Length: 102
Image (cartoon, rainbow, N blue to C red; front, top):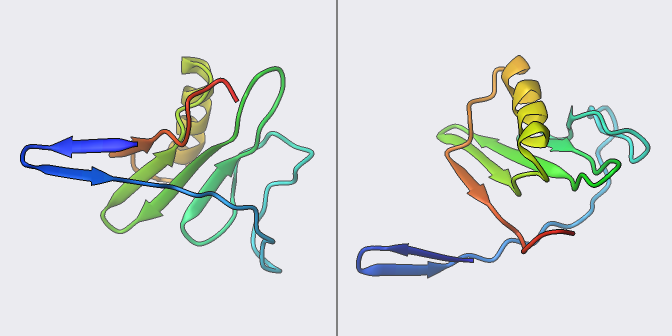
């Protein structure tokens, strides 16, 4: 991805890797499509049928960043509703990890 600000250019590379969830941490099962908090700062909506890729929100003190935007407005609204229920702020940025469709 290329981000441009007047007189400043920055290339951002994001790598998302699978990792084991520590014992005692709330986690989403790969067999479900329910969103879940998977670490202190990460909320995840696993991929689901018929054509929904995973969505991820990284939450920090200064804001929330989404990794990918969903496959439709309804998909994004579903994830946003889950985050709102957990008192997570709307994203200040959305990082598109690759061109879609997965």
